Length: 462
Ligand code: NAI
Image (cartoon, rainbow, N blue to C red; front, side, top):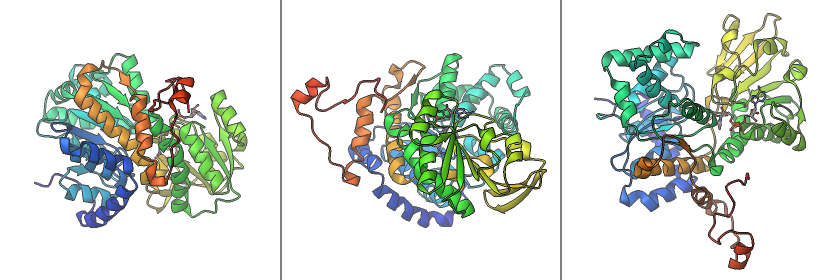
């Protein structure tokens, strides 16, 4: 029986050719295959993956398989799948459930299907926390907390609960069984990591978690340099607008905000930043950006991008004030950064996939990208392979650690040790011709390190 859902399996060959190109740009993952592949250290691991089904993710999946894992995969966003990547993975025999433009109902159904190993999964590889949420929420409902399910607070929650009810009716006790056999989760992004620390704080984390996001070689590279390349790519593919000279507002100046502001500045836009944190506001100012209140620039700027991981950042009252044809988009993980739900009763005109024009009561129109979902993956193809290689090498090391030594960890959230972070960086130097200076042993002892590293104390911030 066909054990995948993809848009068009005949795209597999095209996907395979792009995977082959990506492999040449993902030295960390390829080195991991060379180092560990023969020993099959992930034999017996059954990994459920919930992460954007792109070409780069295909190289990650095939690395996990090369290390001996059984893998099933869903995307973590309804717009981020690259259908040719999904087709190539399906054709290789890995069950994948992902279509660009799938509905929310399909999203949660596909996630459920990715859990359906014969004996269930024993590891989760998550991006944003949906796979973790699914199994933990289901188990809580099974344990009698059914009041949870009676009070959905959003359209998406209604869909999640409907999916949980469906699974409970089909397989009573399933969520509890899954929760109890999961050895751990590795989490890709800031938003998913927030959810994990929150679970830990509430005493609701039933297995160890590795926070991949806060490896330096993840958040200080993917979130920053990745967005620096992929933000403007998304805006251009969506709108073909002239960027030079336009006024762009970036909400949030964390890692994603720093990359996003640099992206827009690089394209010639005049960039303003909003922040709530005085440290990040000062950084933005000293990087040369005007730090403003959204209210003060909302009627004069041309492009608005949210990067906060927070909710209700661009609200309906802001969008009503915007000038005609202002572009509005989000590059944070979830769509609630922009109050898209409050636009539902406005006039929408679909321009093309993931680009909508919405008319305000004043007659002004805004262009909304990817319905407020992360636009670099919805309107373009996400970050380039090279930076994703660093992120995903951390993911593979985290899965290896959970599989081999997970039993030695508490049910807490951990970061990979610094020597592995440095190793991930080191694996990416040759590809771009970087020559690393060697410390003499005298120099090393003078600054209190060893010539082999780690080169910085834990508290160093990069
Ligand atoms: P971060 O925590 O480094 O930065 C977020 C910043 O937003 C903080 O400096 C915070 O003070 C600021 N902020 C919060 N509320 C605000 C408000 N109301 N107005 C203005 N500023 C506000 O987080 P990071 O790593 O930059 O991630 C941000 C989001 O992007 C997360 O949802 C993350 O999961 C997602 N992400 C998306 C990627 C993509 O490719 N689209 C890649 C990596 C992360």
